[in-house]
Image 1 (cartoon, helix red, strand yellow):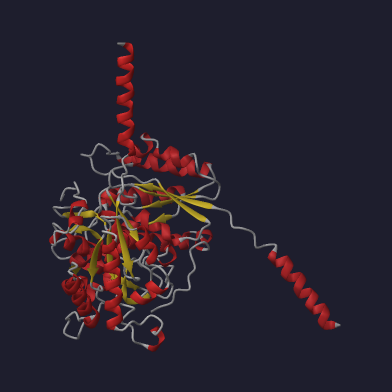
Image 2 (cartoon, rainbow over the protein chains, first blue to last red):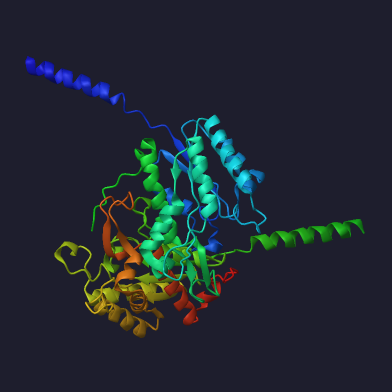
Length: 254
Length: 257
């Protein structure tokens, strides 16, 4: 008799527990940024933005919408309506990862954005994301491959990376310091091996680049993935919610 | 006069319509082979077969149909009826690019179900060739892409001797072009060196990628980067050999920068 009651209690408990296993709410992670993050046209392969490699990390409850575009600064991203296409689609609980700087920081580029405007634009992204109950995350610009004569990696985004750090602190927005972290990765690989992460192609090697390519800003598949892995590692710490949606896999070591 | 114009108009329209009804058959390249060639499921990313990036480098007149499948030998590919549907859909001018060996050569007891002795391997390749040609399509043989193995002096070692030799024998006998991917890939690993060649393979630190929470150390299967470099070797050998297919490989406009 006692056993029967125990059984019934167990069954009842299981039924109650099951009712909590509801479908996870669908979330979207929007990516706002430049060519180092953007999806590429097939004719540009093997150039790879880290946003492309960011897709394979989450379960089916998370959609990745990569709105990053080659050549964009915070200013042109807004002017061309790219920001609007994110803003209008943010639902409560969504995330917006924001990485700019490469095209804002160069005074000779048409996309140049001065320091005051750069900060103002970042704050606009933050405020409008929060207005829609989304979660903004600021990311410092991923490093270029540049070493000094002693083999020490150079900081290629000194000023604009700092502006992002300041804005993140002032606005209480989570920060992924990809500039610093990617520099550490480049340093650990060294001046020669780090070349393997960027779009370096010998003449005649790849049909899309008959004359070869030497590019120390844009990644190949390996670099795109390594940078995406750095961002993911930080994002898992920033957001328990997203961490719970990272794919689980039984693929063991081999 | 009026009806004359009408006739002219009708003829004109007819011609215009005809132009659209000419069958515009795309040349199909069927890839048959094993896990080193196949499109891999997304939940195993970043493991990548070389057939996946290979498909990105042809002009609009070509469609690559990657029918390779992980774990298959020539024998199991046939037994599972993966070949006959390809034969049935082959059109004149299509291509069949075949790379087997990794699973045919697996003599360990746990792989008995896929193992194929050399004489059978040659017979099966010959069957693929003969039936491709019967449909006026073109067969291309590829030797099995090398595994990553180095001796203690840092020399890249041969990993498919017997089966690569068999591919060459079939190629010579049947007069089929042979892309020696075994040698080209080994030369590539040698150029990278014992350590850096790991960058081409499924070598992941633990915790680096969530799909492989315990890391991965696999010197047979490529990652996305390695697969692309292997695909480049195949594409470039198609050009070097001046196979007709070379005319359909894209010529990019990108500048060296």
